[in-house]
Image (cartoon, rainbow, N blue to C red; front, side, top):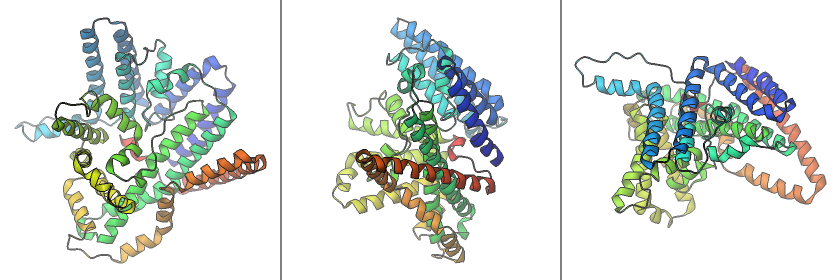
Length: 474
């Protein structure tokens, strides 16, 4: 699988780029579509047909909805689209979960053979749903060219792990786009940055987190638990934001401009602020297609506002996986956001920023325990250990060894989790704008730096074991 990563990086991508840019513009969408289907078939060959079925379903019903005059019929068709898409997603992702629940109450259990989860099905299903809902709302026109709609849903930079791209964001770009030398430069840098996040930071942090969470509750210490959850918090951020950077950068090379998916969430000052910065495309999707249709904050009674928030956040948790722990993770954030809207946010505004920051980091790390743990028993044991409520030592030799072996990775990860690099970029852009010599010197320096960084990443990939992106499982 590591070999496959190198093949993708040094064979597939260069080949696609060469064929794409030497081809006539009228063929470029077709080339991108074929490359995207090949990319998906590389990892999930038998599920390409499932994705194509989803595309055909949404293509046909999108046109039918647009051409239907009767509002009642339009609404019926919309519900048909929603149910059909969720039925496909539900069969592969949630059927086993619900069968297990039913079997707890049935005398004769239902026999169920678990089916593998198609990579990226949650992402491309939500993209397809947003397209048809926008057609129903008359925010966009239905796409008559099935190849163009297929490209929107399958575009390989973001196909398997997002960000969740809205059709209205890229509709014009699918028809006509321009890829300049500046786009190439910005896109390449962004792609390499994302790859570095994954390979050089997320993977080492994952080694720590996997080791700590493999320990039994009795083998944990308070220090080990904190190192483990800190490592996992950094792993999931750099893993997922790294993929988003790669997707945004690669799309930019092809002339697409995707919206940002992360904005330094660990500098947030409240839970609400955190979710404005974390997985922005998913948060905005649930806001626009679930929260607002439920009434949002414009409701007749205050309790309905809190009901809407709890529904949305519980569904957000459930979107991540068919597990009670994922639902609890979403419900946990729903409760916290309700509390902030009710009273907590006013109280938080009165305390120093540093204390607000510490509060949100602790809250988020507690949430990540539920996200990472396999069951509630282990999650609660882990949290009790973190806060010294279990009969375990503060630290042991293993705690010291973990801290010593991974100290440099933890320090680097923490530094890059705050916007220090963004400040440098802002400063360098200002200097480059006022000095041509500085601009050319900066470009040369950055070219050498990113080339060396890519070589360094390759060395890590050659010597590493297979470590897929966390969000491939969603």
